[in-house]
Length: 172
Image (cartoon, rainbow, N blue to C red):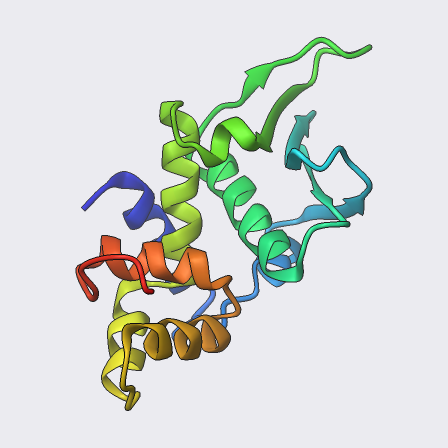
């Protein structure tokens, strides 16, 4: 099991979360992280700013609620897994951005944060339990029902089910 999975599982256990949907906005509040919806370029989903012990997550307010949830979970992954990268604004803050590059998963920290977000929002045990309790005719049905239950996009749920080996390929 990857570190991202272990850390996500520990966070869920820390707050006694064992049923979907997991609320990343509430987890951020519990961790004293301020989440600020704001207008950003469409290719930027969010950012994490850490300075002097305080943390702020900016999330793109024009994105769908499901995408915002994933973005907040992704940024919480950076918070729990990574030190952050230096960025010179007008201050010596450390910032992580979530954008098109991060969603392509070419950078190790972005891959980790995406894995953390998936494990946080759709924990393996919860997904398997939910999938067993659903009667469905097609993979599309399973994806649609689970996406609704876990408040994820159908694309994100498809990837999660594929990564867990619950389904073998994309739904058609």
